[in-house]
Length: 335
Ligand code: ACO
Image (cartoon, rainbow, N blue to C red; front, side, top):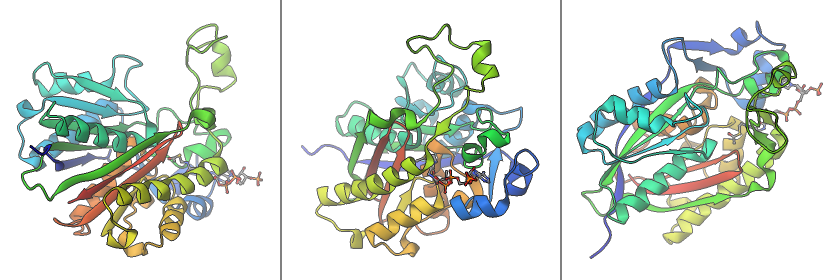
């Protein structure tokens, strides 16, 4: 008997109501709307207010995804939570979702693949479903960047790029074997692990403690990024991953109806499309409104593309992501 095919049965999103424009950032640091738009395409992002944290946004997105799938929370038999900005160092956010949804003692995984987290999670969910291990999986990607960033001029290269938000998907057995996840790939290369990283607080060799006064005084406690290295590696790995998942199905770029790339930088998305020779009309971007929301960008972008009628039943859709680690991957779906 053939393995069941997994399909995204429902999507949900949540973005905090507070909009922070590039002009707002100029009041906090030495930057300009023109610089940010020219280098990244970003015009605004959303930041959480005091009422929200990571899992509260993830929960709102999850409830919307459950409603969209017509699925009762009690049917969920596994939770996968992708984030780099969890509410607590431990435990992870997955168990907080389990508690709030009041569902049974299902497994809850938190995964740490940063911008590639949602794509990794989709592939994990697909594998579990095809193996017959679980039947309905709740996958969440959620980030609160605004509480991690250095919002002074010192941190401007990184902090202008990121925003807060959450997205979720219910993944289950497809009732139509022609529709659902067709192929996927996941990769990593740790040789540049510190190129895009937040190394403090932490317990690495040589540290005196998880966090020290010196770490704070010397402002080590923020993410660091070698932007040009990230850019060059992303535009190499993302097209390769798209080609890989298409080739696994004997398909070509020309067969694609829509590409949903991770929203790191509009220039990265444009370069990926150009290298794939994919027309801009077949790529959906929304980084202009949200900035880089890391594990949340794929569901935020996919959900918006669907709402705009750019992703329709029967379409061949590919999601591709690249992020810190480096980690990257792609998922090809017949929607
Ligand atoms: N506002 C104004 N000026 C700035 C800002 C800012 N926010 N940030 C940096 N600058 C200045 C720098 O100080 C520098 O000034 P100098 O020439 O006087 O020294 C100048 O702008 C150029 O700085 P660079 O860092 O060289 O700028 P670059 O052209 O590389 O653009 C950027 C930076 C946008 C980060 C780019 O490297 C990039 O897009 N990299 C990809 C990284 C990315 O997208 N990361 C997202 C997370 S990773 C992921 O999701 C895959």
